[in-house]
Image (cartoon, helix red, strand yellow):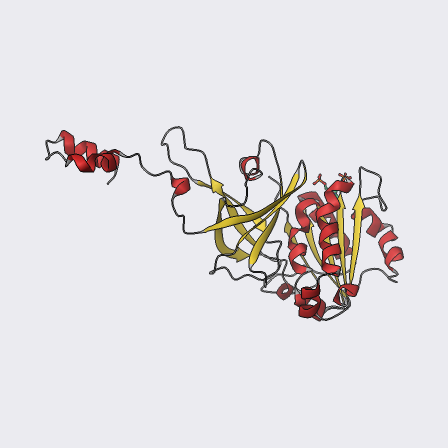
Length: 302
Ligand code: A2P
């Protein structure tokens, strides 16, 4: 029974409740954060990669079906509104970093110290619940691309998340001869999540069984840094424009709409620059409803 109703009925001279009922009647309303929210997932694992990056795994709701590369809305209950005292869910779009066949979900996130969601999300621990809306959407999916020979995954920062899903997706290796994952970050430590993922994938026996022996030979990992010395320096956009990438990978003639397909996921300026480069090579932007040669999605950055 809501508290306001109890007070009202007592004030109106209604019969006083039995004393045995009083503790139950005057108990405070349950904290919405502890109510069994219908769309929740339980955190099973958390890994902190740098002071600005972390990944976590959760249980997968039975109702959640998705295509590798899609995103969902996830979050936590917000602080109570100072006026109404009501708490609302604080949700953001997150690419699912695990593949569609995995029985858990994985997410890769930035930590923003004054970000409304990530300032709190970064403190989650195994056993905690997060809110998860089981309505996956997104354009970084195989269905949005026409058949091709080479598939490029272009990422900056946490934009690698959808590719963490797609490089563990059997269809990626069934549909293409070569898959090139590029990841540009400011510093070497920010590459670690992706580097480990590729390394683990190459020696994963379950994946080899699922995708066919030698599948990982098709995958080329091409990490670059821009603000710290590493094996390969520079923005991927620059390395595409000056031809370095093609020289490094032995690709003659650059990108072609006949053979190359691309997915782009990063900050807005990165996406804009990549679109110009891809269009300059004759690739056209596709969508679920109209597949073409490349697709773009903005990485979550708040
Ligand atoms: P840079 O260090 O030269 O800005 P951020 O942390 O700002 O999201 O950037 C992540 C990475 O993406 C950085 O290495 C950054 O390089 C790079 N980057 C940012 N904007 C672009 C862009 N328009 N084109 C290519 N790379 C970009």
